Length: 316
Ligand code: NDP
Image (cartoon, rainbow, N blue to C red; front, top):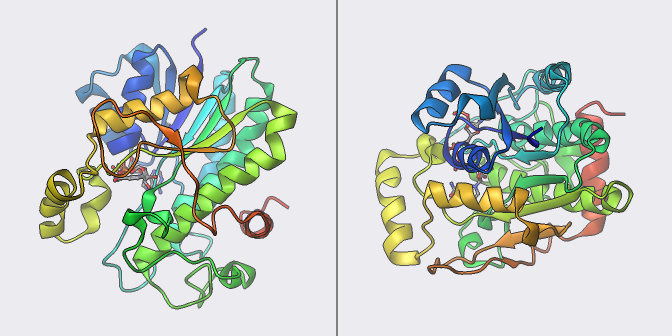
């Protein structure tokens, strides 16, 4: 049987192209999406073979939906050999926070808490799989890291002492550090949590399970719909800026191949690694393991994030 991978947010952008790349490497891809009509049309457009994919509903901004997804996956009777946590929202123009059904701020819920719950639940499925090279991959981004050029633009991420999580993360709390609402920072904070989650998974479970836990920055994929909630002018200029000024631009196809490599290529079998191809793209440039930001490599903060996230998603 083909190995099976679950990819969240496979209806557009990096997740869709990763689904395409893995399907063409003869994986069976579970496309875990919130809009199945859209995902179906996208899979058809890209000619992902019907035999190589299954569409399944998940809303990462709703923790009950994450649990329902896991139950439905289990009823398929497939083993789980890889998981890619890719879905994300970025809503830079929001003035007021949106909330999940649980009452948590929605960017952090979708990007981090939903995936945190999914990783913890699906770890059990992966442990049961007989596949010899199991991997769990979480998408990172350069903007998580103020030490990198792409991460220097304010507002910078800052988890503080996780005061907002500790206070229950519901109204009136909007941010992980308990400070006032800043939608761009909420996205960056969530991506720091993604990297911390990957590193904690590695510390806690790599030795006992043999699973490879890793993360990556695929490059600046400037023309994905991630920027759909930004000003129109930004959407037009950002890809050009990244192509001709910073040199960071990466096509969706290439980003999808990079994710597929981290999931399946032998040279990426390194647990705890954060892969990057650098900020400026050069043809045939090799990937390397990059140091993550000071907050994302702080083990104490990682443990604290783990404990509080466990409580918020109801795993205790
Ligand atoms: P897109 O907006 O193109 O794709 C995001 C995907 O997530 C879509 O399929 C979207 O579904 C899905 N999604 C959003 N909210 C939910 C939800 N509540 N439940 C389920 N699925 C949801 O963005 P990208 O492809 O650019 O981003 C993918 C990942 O790559 C993200 O983790 C991002 O942080 C990371 N990344 C992106 C970079 C870039 O330059 N674009 C750079 C570095 C990292 P729908 O189609 O229904 O909206």
